[in-house]
Image (cartoon, rainbow, N blue to C red):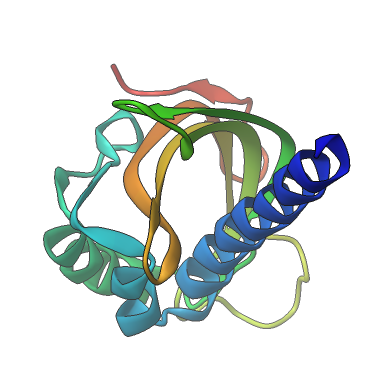
Length: 161
């Protein structure tokens, strides 16, 4: 019995890790349909610490689609993932919390192609709340906690509060 529980935990961990990666890829590729599909029907995202909005996944996807037009090149890296599984009411293992750091280099639209350096880099921490659904793990909440940002030739700036 113990081996089955351990295997189930490993499989859940891989699925949760895959979902976080799908989130990063959807944002970086501007695939807003895929982004919406990563969330539960009541899923929400909060980008206010990075100067954005808070709302349901559809509202945030629309805002991201408009905002990310400013940055046609983006490649955010999500690292130092801490995963904790927890109960949903009385069913053990149906929720997960992920805290992970990110670094996000981006290039502004219309940038002259002479340099390969990003025009804008920011970093911080994500807090993800996940729920196991019939369709697999989905995001219930994403909270961005931007800690710094930098443009070329400038010092890191603290995040807006």
